Image (cartoon, rainbow, N blue to C red):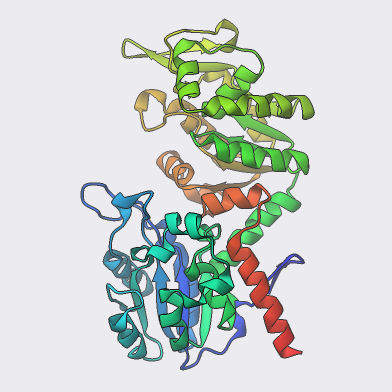
Length: 425
């Protein structure tokens, strides 16, 4: 299967799995209630279903590997038994579960799987070699991962490896990039959809194409911004949240002591010089807020940027003038990409900007793509996700892809495809 000339993979349809052992890597990492430790959104679990059904329909002996949580969000590092229950309900087929990943118990359980059956193995992140701190410290190449515990114990049990975990494509972990070195490899249906949607956005978007960038993680916004402005993908960028405030500072508009201190203490002022450069290099392409809202004595107050600074104000949302201008631009757009909410939407007093921007996007005739956990959560709160053309399961991987950076999974899949072509010649 070809996504385009630069990204080629074997399709999940191209192999005969009848009676064969298939190892499927999915990303069903889900938001967890901090008190009950129960899954609060099964969006990623639902998205994994088509590939699982496809493999099972070919009479495969299927084992699924997946992660939940990490050292960076230890509170979400829990067993996958509820994931197995939800998969079972969605598939209409029992998904057996064993709370072991690659030890003797897991190996024995895999060997007992019969054609048409499926088992979910334990949380990958129980293994040091799968967590982000290991990845960042050790920096193994895929061929060096073949002696990791996971690969050494699981690879000999399987005939095929399928990856359907684009949401984790930015992770250089054994479960993501090493099995391709040893087993015939295919990409799942979700992965192909994700890459196709993002490639369409990057390479051939209908014009005008706008990016709506908000939220608190402004490193993501600035990474994407440089790429999509430089290559002409974006005709206009609408900024809000901290990103929008950085662009106001770059224009010489003071925010006030409280907000500027907030930005400086988090070292976010380092982005001001980048913002100045983008404003100079891409005149007219970047929109910054026209007004901002904050709280005074329990009431929402909105101030025009012309009347800034307000020394004690901590801005939490864009104001009505910004909402009106951004909604007008969105209405005229042919392609819309969104990452990050416009304000602190979790607070009812400051949900207006996020809600109205989402309503404008949902009613727009343009092709819309959204991604990132907080972005999807915000959208779900205010609109029907069916009104969005494509909802990407990825966060970090999506940002890295749109920033023009190489993704470890994409490189591993390219390598596996090239190897398969040599084998067939």
